[in-house]
Length: 318
Image (cartoon, rainbow, N blue to C red; front, side, top):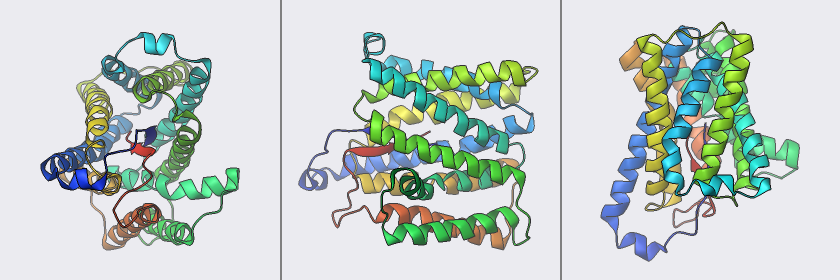
């Protein structure tokens, strides 16, 4: 899922225009991040087919926390953090735990491509959550995006048949909690140092998954496919992608980042097709297109003519 982090205002547009090679490198880096995120759904699908949820998530999130930890700078930044930071780290970690558990449970019953596109609906769900819980009025484009996304999700899940798969329903539940996670971080946690905060919430998520797994699962057999899935998601889709994205989003307009990172769902479908021979029919592909348009539309209303998006809160990936 995505998380929101805070960056200082970027350089003005004239500076950006004078450094096109750096912007190109940053955009290509974000494209790599999208590919890593999308292909991670294949790794999660492999683990899901072997029945792993809580132990699998617990191991990969704790390992990811260790991967990101060296980038905190000083360990004292975590131990001496203000008390409110620990409260919000725990809440963020709990939301991450619920969202990731629902997502991984859904991976047992649905394809990597379906999971990727349905998870991307969190972007469309954010305005709904803001209206329901914070009574924030939303732009009309949000209503259009919700309608498009709902229709697209139905077509993707059913393939034109009036039967929604259980795995897709779980993925939708996960997307709802990803949306709450993003909102909570944007509203309450953005004032804290982002990398240290991320380590904290990753650790909380991992520990909660292991605790629930201890009571709910018989254990996990660390076969080669499971070990690969844990390593891939921890080192690449969480650890490496995090550090690459933090660098890239400092050197490219936020609108570039939002659009490129939206391609994660597209790469999930491609990876599922190439690696797992997953196939979508024409109706499901049309549903994917509707969802992608809805995701882009829900973000496009925030862009200015200069191609910028909210400079204080940029989206940081799963």
